[in-house]
Image 1 (tube, rainbow, N blue to C red):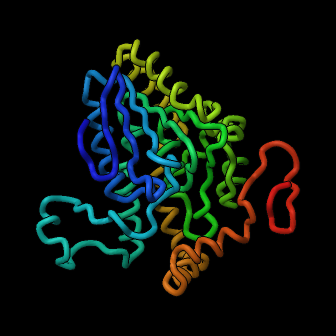
Image 2 (cartoon, helix red, strand yellow):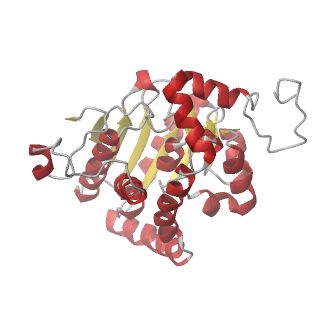
Image 3 (cartoon, rainbow, N blue to C red):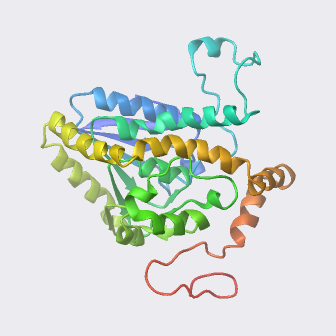
Length: 303
């Protein structure tokens, strides 16, 4: 096991386990965490003892999304920059192109999941929101607890999705239903619409993932690579990889909406927690219902 600031990495019995390890922050994704994630993904891909990768979260959640506090953002692009990080010569967030550049840089860390040769499994419990879904849906297979919560609430005011694999998993209608509103569904419902491979009771989640890894460990990793990559090439022919690049640019468009400007102003005046509470409070319990009518009480909660 190697030591990182934001993740735990271990190799055992033909698999690498990557644990997002900021449990006190519900594993919110900093740039530092994403850079460490990319590093160990390529390490696992290079290690002939590894047949597959499992990604899971420490504590109560897989990941509640991107870290909106700005913590863990100082990850130099190069050794040159690290020697003079405050020179004023490097990109901030001042222009549209700066914003796109930073979004694309972070996306390259996450795209290691799609580009690496070996298969990955997301083991999802608790919250899998916003950036958490960006990581999980780039994995080759997602297995979730029945009571896990999936959604992208920041689409309500903060911007668009900087990665978008939703449409390739659930089709255009459910992708729109969930990302246009930021409403959430459970792991059990996510299985029904194809967002995840499988949903199981929480007490069976780890065993379900590990026994799948056991089966992958029986297969020549070069053959696993061949079969993963042909499926991913099919996705690329359907535009999936290009869409991820476009998603980052589209998020810049989202950042320049009136809603996003009002979000930023509210954070400056009232703080992050109050801003999120006011935004999400309008949506009641924030739930969508996959089966049956959405009948709500006066507080917007599903009945």
